[in-house]
Image (cartoon, rainbow, N blue to C red; front, side):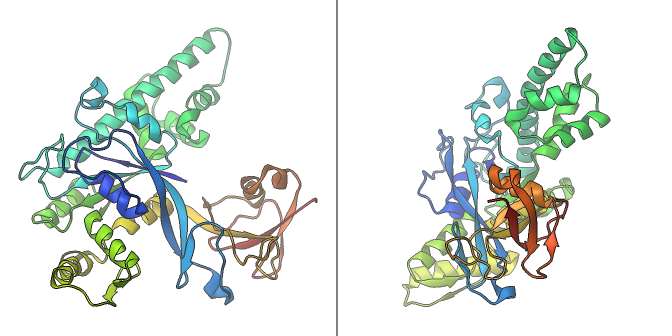
Length: 384
């Protein structure tokens, strides 16, 4: 699972990336601090099924704290986008190629209004403009890719009858777009209007969440409401990446207990540290419920992409893998996936030698067409 972080320069993309991954990356108010993409692992969180089965899990990847499972996802933080980037302005659109395989994108928007479209310091900038121009640049990026795919289709069609959907799917394979989505958009918009076709395809294949960043600064709350009115179809989450970095750093140092929503001091702190934490509590936690960073990741993966979590095990009675680890793996999968499809996800050999499955909760045997449900714990049966 890959998530792309996009936005204009100095919007807080690298701060969001650091808040989600706790990797040290260059963070500066100077535009184009990020030249090469930052790549790291963040985590989506769910209530682990260990509670339901009254066991303690041993994750192979990620971790589990107090019954909360942290499942890894790959994050890409790419260079800032400026107006007319598709014409080569700023750093152009070259770095968007790094997020071709992203399933969704989180657009980091500076809602404080203190940076202009190019990331320079200003006052009273309208963040609505940022959302509009970044979407326009993404559409221009998609148009360039789709136009080449359409040209390939037209060339092939001259030499004989070919299937347009299959050809487009093949040519757009680098974007990781499902064939059904190409078919859906093609039924609504013909290839005669490549711009509209590309825009519609981009919207459904690379859904975007707005991280309304710097939500703790003066003027941000008003701009967040304006964004919600201007883009009612988009998920807009008040976010303070800087606050999340501060809280996670304090947690790592053992100064506070922090669960992603609330924190409490458990050490003797200096006056300045207490004042900083008090501001975060008042301006972020109490006002918005969280710093928004974790919510952005969770919403992107589970709401926008309609995913669920499934736990495969080798022994449905002991809930273990072949090494005895309890509930070792948590897979993020599309809602509606069938058991045999899931078997192929785990390993090609398991899919090819698939026999059936066992539901750990009911102990019932399951067939290949069984539709997986959220929090299913499944033993897959296959020929040894």
